[in-house]
Amino acid sequence: MCCYLLEHYLFRLYFQRCRRAVSKVKLGYVLFCFGMIALLEFFGAFVHIFEITYDENFVYPYEGNVHEFVSALRRNEKPEVEPINEYRYAFILKQPQKCKEDADDTLRLVYIVKSAIENFDRRTAIRNSWGIEKRFFDVPARTIFVVGTHPEDEEVEAKLKLEAGIYKDIVQADFVDSYYNNTIKTMMSFKWLVKYCTNSKFYMFVDDDMYVSVKNVVTFVRNPANYPFHLMESRKVYSAHKREIKRSDLIDYNDVNFNNKNATYDPTIKMSFTQSFAIHESTNNDSQRNVYGKQDRQINESRKIEKERLLRLNATTLNRVKRQFFDLELPDDIRLFAGFVFMRSAPHRHKFSKWYVTLKEYPYHLWPPYVTAGAYILSKEALLDLYYTSFYTKHFRFDDIFLGLVAKKADIVPFHCEEFHFYKKAYTKYSYKYVITSHGYEDPNELLQIWNEQKALGNA
Ligand SMILES: *[C@@H]1O[C@H](CO)[C@@H](O)[C@H](O)[C@H]1NC(C)=O
Ligand SMILES: *[C@@H]1O[C@H](CO)[C@@H](O)[C@H](O)[C@H]1NC(C)=O
Ligand SMILES: *[C@@H]1O[C@H](CO)[C@@H](O)[C@H](O)[C@H]1NC(C)=O
Ligand SMILES: *[C@@H]1O[C@H](CO)[C@@H](O)[C@H](O)[C@H]1NC(C)=O
Ligand SMILES: *[C@@H]1O[C@H](CO)[C@@H](O)[C@H](O)[C@H]1NC(C)=O
Image (cartoon, rainbow, N blue to C red; front, side, top):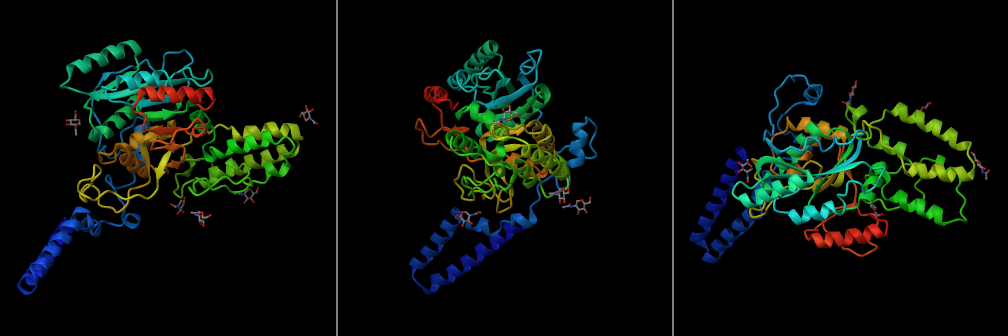
């Protein structure tokens, strides 16, 4: 509020100066004055002046520690403070059976596809490409599409009901489907998963215009810390028959800072996933359950045992062990929230941007770290914590920013990986080897074509 008053005050100051100028100098100056003001205002310069510094001052309602309340909600108990934000839309199409059809209903991966009702062709293409649930026999997976409503368009609604009847993979919630309702769509997806589908280890949220390599997703969740560099190393090792693997390759755990966007592949980097776990522990005290949440002591212990075991192996077995290093299983309590992360980006303040935000809506000069919408992966722990933490996070209309705000409250540090391309990565037959997702496949035929080509090459 005071910002606006100040802004007004500054405007008046400028105005007075200009008026004085009128009496003294030529009209040109005056016009120049107004022109500058208009230009600065258009590009949000005045707004920038009144932004609050993110680093020192960031708080976002609910203002307080919410961990206790989230724990209570997860235990199905009454929290001390009532939730401030819930998305209470009904499910019109529910598919409660979707994740529980088989007797052995432990799933590895659930794709939750943010779709729009009218995108029938895109859904068909996805069902016939990366959404195939039996893509890998040892990776039980499900694909679910989430849509809102088009209350005015009965024809399209009827067609949707027909489609849902055939494939039984469409969840529809009762809110108007539109760009600024994306947060509602995302959080209704969370709600559905928490209600009907908690039997999976990983959840992948994807838009219906994405290329996804199931193979690379599966590889990524086995070893996110080193993706895709460990694949390059193992290839090198196996192709270079002459090179003997030294014991030091395995037991000399160097640091690898995988959070450094700058990091290029360095052949001297040794496998060091245990260390990576430690690096990613957050500075707060809730570290036991955090991203790479194993306790220090435990890491230390397992590392020692591993070292001793490796010292006893011969070269042939070393090779095999090394491969196992590349291919490991994350603990069940890991809080993984991964995708293409913007660590420090700023809100748009020029008035005609699609992403324009007012100071009243968000007063800080930076966003919290957030994963670009379009494609991201959550572990189950992260899903549950984000869902219940969202109850204590004021609504925000951009879904990726909203999840960034929620993650910050939940002390989950988003995990960055370059291979989630939020733009359309230039396609060649060989440029998509390590791509996990690429945006911009609105054309279902194009998606099918390149997905099939990549599958034939063993990349999808
Ligand atoms: C979002 O959905 C709600 C509930 O259906 C609706 O009232 C509202 O108009 C929608 N907002 C937009 C921007 O479409
Ligand atoms: C990125 O790489 C350049 C050149 O190798 C180096 O000077 C710079 O410090 C690196 N940045 C970070 C954040 O590591
Ligand atoms: C973590 O907890 C300990 C006591 O359990 C406390 O002394 C320390 O200040 C806390 N650290 C942070 C970063 O909150
Ligand atoms: C690991 O344990 C050893 C003792 O067994 C200790 O000296 C060392 O500081 C520990 N390292 C870490 C990282 O906890
Ligand atoms: C290495 O050890 C494995 C058993 O651990 C054994 O089967 C194999 O023959 C050994 N290879 C060599 C070259 O000694």
